[in-house]
Length: 234
Ligand SMILES: [Zn+2]
Image 1 (cartoon, rainbow, N blue to C red):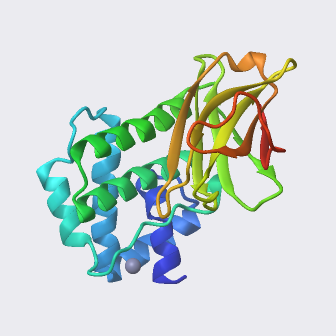
Image 2 (cartoon, rainbow, N blue to C red; image 1 turned 90 degrees about the vertical axis):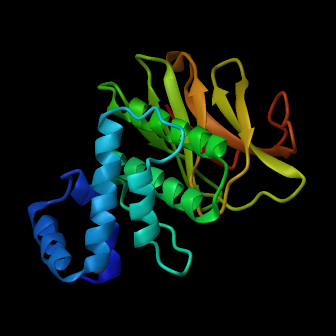
């Protein structure tokens, strides 16, 4: 396996979520690759912070220093494992690390960072619930869009990792679909290079599906005006 493919396994390795063969392959590679060792240390730091429920606004100084030391001269975003089966939790950790890296590199406002981390912690909290479910949205376009939800607690989130730009005058609108008619759950635009999380609070037992249609920016529509491009059963 190459450095690139082994690096993609690091989030899952940090969470002990790999097969024994993969664990051995990553372990052997770590002995020879300083870059991956640095990245693993960062992932473990992030994972342990999550376990301790972070409340701080900005990344702690030590983590920030580690990130800046580990970052390449060229911009780079940690790839989220394509194989969802590798572990939802691993993907969530990778998303958080990608956010911290992006924010540290471009010096974005602490408030924005706080919002993104809060959104991603929301996803992780949902996935941690024993009743958590996830559904892949499929339809007329290629996309990486999943809906995670916990019916017992009424908490959910749309996680958008790959979706093309809808165009300047348009937005995507998320719908909760019940027998009577779809209810809007918000509008959003994808962000290149990072995941977008749209929190949704609802009594999911009332609905049969979630759907996404393309509507007019900035507010969307009261009812869908176009055929949904992506649908997932819940
Ligand atoms: Zn490596």
